[in-house]
Image 1 (cartoon, each protein chain N blue to C red):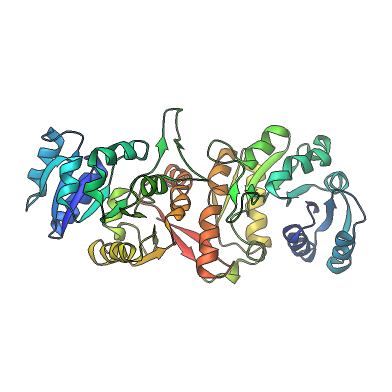
Image 2: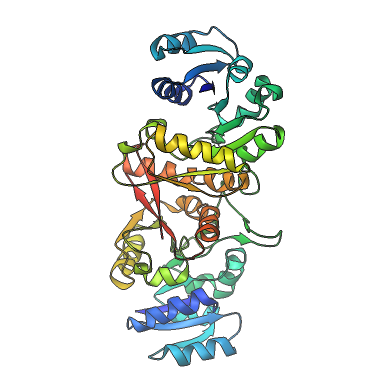
Length: 215
Length: 215
């Protein structure tokens, strides 16, 4: 599959590398093409990996990952361009973490809205699926870093897109338990887990922490 | 132990009944004394159980449970009276659920503050411990309703009060895994789990749902 990764931070680079390893044709996108980080990533990811602008990465793709920070995601996706996202599954991995008022970060949007919903409203023809935002990136692509079964959540308005993401999470990344929370308004619940995650990270002194739903 | 329960809703009545069963001397408190609900509860709880105003229930107690809805908790505790809470462990079970704009409810405070913190600020000599707000009341007093191990959180500024609550949760209510998240600002994380809980409740069609921390 042709996959576009928006964002050349550690999340974008790690997800992109894993997807390239799985045999996908990955193009990583940034504000401007040809940056040092992106070129180094292409070299290390190998295969048919390429890099370009947000728009070029999205135009290339059948499936797009938003790996930009939540507070700038709308801006990055505007640069990607509505037409380049049309009809495509757009996996939103972002969290609206705001560290401008000190640590721990707070959320720049929550409770009555979420980044996932903001993106879906701004790009109504994209099929936004919120997922992966509740774990550190190493765990996203290798859930076995945490012993036992633990839960990954997905939400989105398009059942086919959600099913496609669940399949990728399970067969591609090795997730054993993926729970579909419903429409994209569930992104509020997913993003509001972050304060708990940050507390657990501090307390347990490892980023390899997640939750399992018990019932 | 002499325990005061503030609130005669299903949470207060169930916690009070369990604590009476454990041999504690429980007084349940409401806006006004002698109400039908409170009198019926005293009859069914038996033992040395009594009822009264918020102030009478708090004055009676060594340990106080706030079981009023989060949006009216400050008001209820003001009626209880600062002097009646002084130096006492005050377990805050509340959630700031606001259903005034429809379902699912949103939180009336979150992200940069919490009911737990509001209470601690308003009653600085009380030892506020946030706990139990992340599960339905039947599970609070009988965690075995959910199979396997799952996690209860506590937070608070006073280490002795937190330890006292952890002991009650474990030896009184049967919790196997209680995790101390730190000072009372962690109440934000605990209260912000509610949107996820509400989603899971809807999806799984049972209120007997909780999370387990995996790491």
